[in-house]
Length: 323
Image (cartoon, rainbow, N blue to C red; front, side):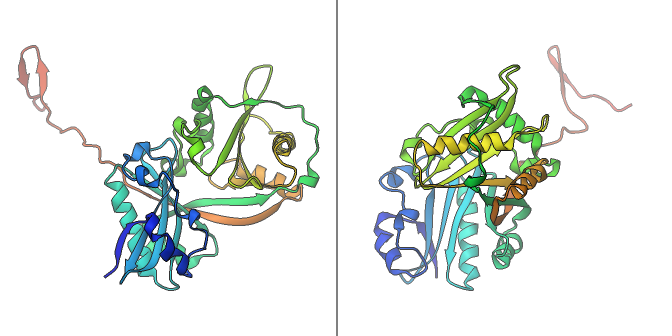
């Protein structure tokens, strides 16, 4: 019978021998803090965690998850590995994670899978109860098409900008996706222990220097100082200067390294996504892949007040009579 447990340093060598997994075990192990990290309450977790399925001491499946930064009730499923056609192991891992983290307070789970992975889509949606929300599309930016001229005013992000950014983002979400995909202001704030993670993140605000209106929120991130990803949130109340924003991003990264690739994502659940994608196509930037966004949410039941309820009046309790 298969057993599921947290991945530890002692499983590292078994992983290397298993053809299911890459030889770079750092992709799944987050030493040296993973031992201490596992005892933290969900709201204090700041790194991914991995779990393995074993049978007769052989690893036959792995899943990696992470709490969403700034949101202790939402968990992202990052990686899922199992033998070809062994969907029962995949289902067991998913259901274990949902049960494990729901018991710690998680009420929402999110996963992104390749649009061509119909079997995985069926596993998550039919077998595990996830629903498909929308898509996210990754684009490679053609840096040769970026100019060095930019008249837009851009400053570093501050944590007291987070509430405005959260409101800007949530206002742009298509209405029926909001319950599953809206973000809290804490999700935009800087990570307190960012130095302990594998990713470098830089945030900026494009601002109108006359009325201080936010014209864009820019997040630049990298894990290897070669592949850079830029997530950009544009408001709806004016026509964005996409070229100026990408020129700024290109200059910022060029100060760190001359040899790099730049990517951005478009989010299909935002109501001005078509404008952004049209700009990218018209300027010869390339769509690399599309991932489907699936969520599973648990909603807390709100108890409705009874038709007959007790009222406290002065020093006595009375029950209203029907009329």
